[in-house]
Every structure is written in structure tokens, then in C-alpha cells.
Length: 316
Image (cartoon, rainbow, N blue to C red; front, side, top):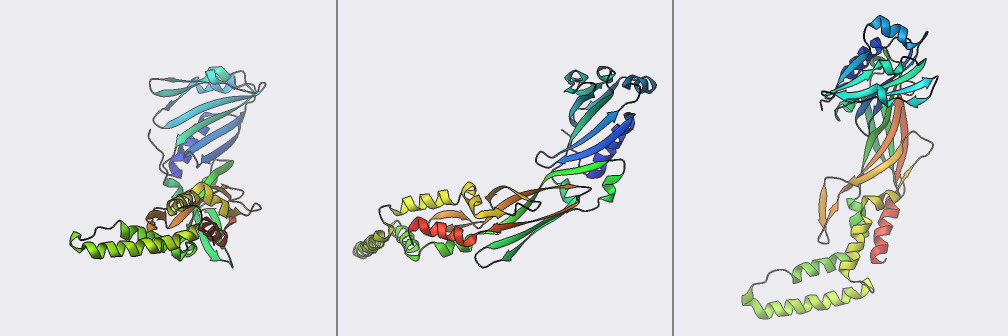
């Protein structure tokens, strides 16, 4: 499917469709950021029935290229309220709106959705997520704003940007390293040394070295309690799952942002023989409109509690 790559193209498509529909209209452009879809909708109140202006128009169908349009939907409002599926059908790679099916309506809503390029939103909205250290946590100040609302107003009653994503990159490498006990790091190092290749010509030295490592390992092993090191590392791996990490993220419910999800960042590091994330990408979302073109919020990363959670895995 061809994608619209900028807001200008989307507005032009909406304006072209708006000129086709006659009557008292409420034109709306809704941008669904979750699905990368721009949805033009118009609610029309028609005087003396829809058939009057359809006859003047001289045609009873409107055609949309399936390569450009994601869907077309029609809802009757007066005198009945229902979705009118029979008014829209597909033929020869075209979506056809049949106006004959809505001639008896006094009021209806038409929706046309266009697939949007994922990167075009960066040219429409300015955003920020800036960290600020607290005593035992980090606060992220979140904000988003339409760059040029005046360009969106022409020909539209309202513009809505739904669930715009703002990502906070939460650094966790230092919190992980600080929370892992030194004896656990040493045990992991011993495991690595034991499994290392040794020169077979140094048999006596190797046996002596292995005995020393085994004795040191046995001494440290007592501090782990009933579970062995591998079990502890498995617990750490589960602890660092994004679904667990969200427990250490708090949002200000009185502000404009809400928590959507989180995922590992692309940067990784090695510790205890494991590959771990350097940071977590915490994705928040917000809604913007012409009436509310700028939003702000706060996100708290409870870094101390996160480190304590790792410490509890190994025992303080």
C-alpha cells in the first residue's frame, strides 16, 4: 500500500473529499499513532435530504484507490443510527462509496482512513523527555507539542493526534552493577576460570589451580543459600524482563501522559556471563488537539527500589 508521507498530502486528500460532500459539515482529522493511520471524518447534516445535492452533483458514487486508502466507513445518524455496510464495496482495486445507499438520510458520518508513513510524525510534533535526579529516583519531564498548529486549521473543524509516543531512555547499567554483590561477581569469574582452556603440559599447576578455585567457590557458595548460582542468574534474567521493569515506573495520573510499555534498549553489556540491557526504553503516550496543542507530564523511575530488587535476589 502506498503511504502518505507528510501532513500536507493528508490535508489535501481530506480537502478534496470535503469539497465533494455538500451540506452543514463538521470536518475532523484524527491521527491514530498506534496504527499509523490518518482518518478524515465528516459529519454531515443535509437540508431537504441528501438526494438534492447528489442530483446536482450528477453522480452517485465516489471511488478511492485501495493502494492509497485503508478503509471507508459510513454511519447513519438521522433518522436511524447504524453502520451502513452496503454503502461501501470493493471492485477492481477500488473502494467505492455508493451514495444511493444513503439518499434517505438527514445526517450521516463518513470516515476515510489513509496509511501514514511512520517517520512523518517527527515533522509534525516536537517532543522531549529530560531526566532529573532525585534523592532515590529519577524524574523524567515529558512534553509534546504540535510544531505548527496554524497549518492544520484550514478547512478542518478539529484535528486530533491520538496516542503519540514519547520514549524515555532509562539508564540501568550502573544500578545493575551496583546491586550485584561482589562475591557473586567473583563466583561468576571462578566459573569462567574453571571452564577456561589450560596448557596440558602444566598438569600439576592446573590441578593445584583448580583445587584452589573449587575451595574458593565452595566458600562463596555458602552465601547463596539453598539455590545455586545458575538459579540466581535465571531469577535475575526474569527480573530484567520489561514486563517486570514497569513495576519501577510511576506516572503522574494528573498529567497528560500515560505509560504504554517498555522494552530493552539496543545497547547491551556483559555481566555474570549474561547479556544485559544498558538501558530500558520506556514508551509513554499522549493526545494532542488544536484546542490542546501542547502536553506535559512526569515519569518517575524508582532506581533505588530497582537495585534493591536485584539485591534481594542474591540476598543482602
